[in-house]
Length: 464
Image (cartoon, rainbow, N blue to C red; front, side, top):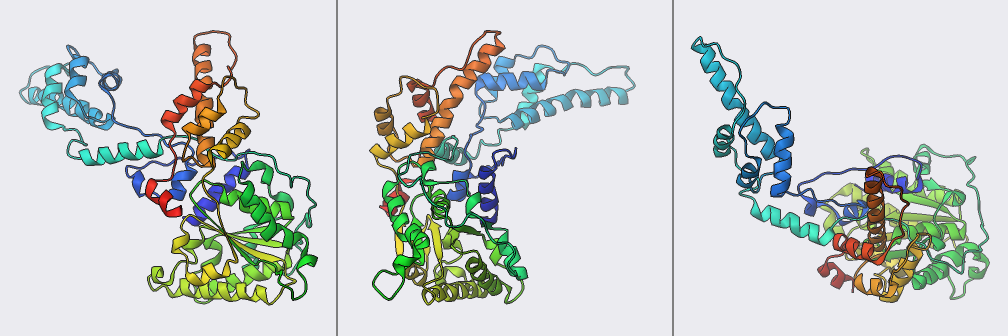
């Protein structure tokens, strides 16, 4: 799962790659919150209405010879039927006349296949029931999930930053160093500073979090001379970003490495965990040795709770226990090497699942929470800064979006932006000469009916 999400996130940094992940499920409530957030559009394909059932039935039977079929009556009879059920109904009905033909041929009668009629459909209705008829609770669960998560679209917010004029400490990674096989494997997750495409100016609001990261991460990496000696000011070797999904933790991690001119190693479980005994521990050692060779380095572990969870949650896995122990041992080694400019940056939606020993090693633990009304207004203005719009009341919009994360707000704006596009396509279809109209407040209100915030109430209280 972590490897899939890591590669999926990589698509966002490659806008020219025409690749899209399309998922389908009958059980969306079983999906991980982190997976749900990465689906920028979540579209419920529900049961058809009476009007839609009539259209589906006409489409199914369009190439079929039939007579006297009352499609309106048929659509009323099939309340609760899915498209698949309707196809099944028509197929069952079509078999009646085939059975009649076979019987007539058996009786040596010269006949041809008669047209399908309404009686065939009524008889088929007695055999084919709606597949959801006995699963009302399931349909209610799907509707509840749709009401909570809705549909939308996502990614990067933009806001100005006073740190935009920075000096890069390192613009290239030295690839000439001697790598072990394990280091070569880790190198696949290494991003040189000059290839990181995210900066603080790309992230909406979060000024207090940025300031904390600049103090804990950026300053020690850019100005190690200030942290030399044995005074109270020590270089921080571990920072944890925690908080609700969609608040920008992963983007912050990449941005801080970029701002500090540091190499960025995005650690995934697949690059660490091996099936052969002892190889996982060697991968952990290779991770830290490679980090030292390309320093200054940010070692980033997204969803860190999956790798360094509480001991009781590992179900007795010796491999995971060994990986955790080796990782913490190497991490501790950084403390005895104050001149080594390496920092471990973790991100999680579930900080309460982390091992106590791991939490202690994160000297700074920064909550990346949901934006305030004022911050939501700033984020919305930033997202729509380059969009043609009029008549948008950002203050009202920020009030309407209580509980929305930065990702949710981007979902909202993207969904709203589709309305003018749909109108344009319809007008072109009608041969009207038109141009794309500006985004307006009504678009935002309509989008608000489709896009809901990701965080459920119980989890929000837990973070609070």
